[in-house]
Image (spheres, rainbow, N blue to C red):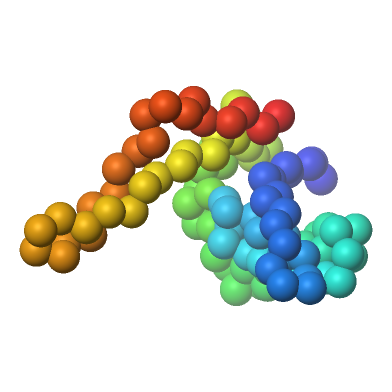
Length: 110
């Protein structure tokens, strides 16, 4: 048995906190940040156990960017998280255009 680690994005949606693991596209929620964190652990565990039962675990881990080396899975190294701000504008034909805000550097979250 070995450890796998995944990124968890935590954000607020109304009165709830949502936890999302983008590598697996698994989400869960809770009334507090701690409850959302607990619930995402249960959701990921159930998702991976279900995939193992269906015989699709290797495929899912490969799609998540993991590499198998013998009996071990290596998870990609997390390097950072940026927030990109975009301005939504419309041209003369009402076609949407998204423009990066050049005056702001991405905020770094570590």
